[in-house]
Amino acid sequence: MFNKKFLYSMILMFCLISLASAQTIQIQETLSRQGAEYMADGLVLNSISQSHMIINENATFYMSAYDDAGKIQDKDDISCIFGYASPNGYVVTLINQSQMTFLNDDTIFVIQIDASTLTTRGDYVWNFNCLQGLKGGYLNGHFVVNGYGEDLTPAHSIKFNSSMAFLMVLLLLSIVGLFVVNNYIGKFTLYWISHILFIVMAFSLWQFNQGYTTTFIALAGVWKILFYVSIIAVVPMLFLSIAWIVYIHLFNEHFQKLVDKGMNTEEAFKIANKKRGGWFNGQ
Image 1 (cartoon, rainbow, N blue to C red):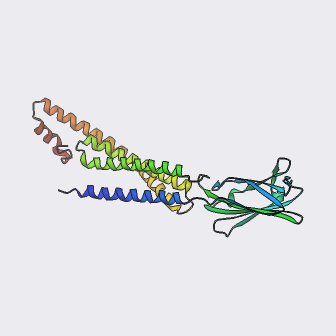
Image 2 (image 1 turned 45 degrees about the vertical axis):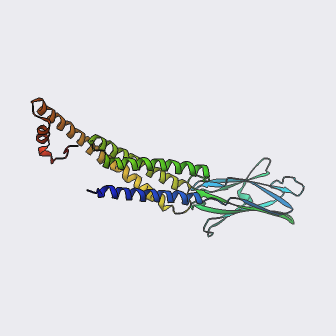
Image 3 (image 1 turned 90 degrees about the vertical axis):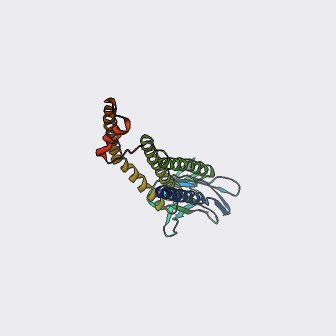
């Protein structure tokens, strides 16, 4: 007879693999457009900053300014302002020179971005503008805010996708094994292996989405829920497994006593299994 449960489990696994693969591909394409354009009229501006920031954490920019002769300018020579906008473009924050701190004899402008303004994931735009009499210059660019404060490089993506593919293959094999292996101890072991693999996969997908993605963050929430549900499910599974092991032990002990009394194994099995609904019918 065709095993419908096996077919349904295979369909479920392929859907799970397709969903996970689609997420990793989508995230891999969500790369930053970090860069800075320089335009000036008498002043040359320079920036030393990260291209990625961690959401809900403070960030720091380091800026400097030079005249057309290459001389670095200090805070008393020029007037500067720094501004940045959130990904939706509605929240614009300005930091004037009085709010900045300075390094290297007041020639390095240190700009602190408060965590309360970095609460949205995505691509922020910034602008640093300085004036010195009739001279001026500005520098602009982008920075990305996500969970890790890192760019999703091809190396990271390949490593994650390869690891997930390996885990998916193991999970698929363990589920197939549940329908192929007849020994009840083997089934018990494969069931636990499948559950543990699913926990690892759910946790990995949750952390990966939470850390790198700047869009569709709800996907991270889905995998987070699945992770916690699978973790909570371990508790009743553990008690049921203990009860099952105790039952098997008592069953085997009863069976062995009947065999030791001279009863053939088939009859001893029927008697030992008679009041137990035939759970171990030949397996």
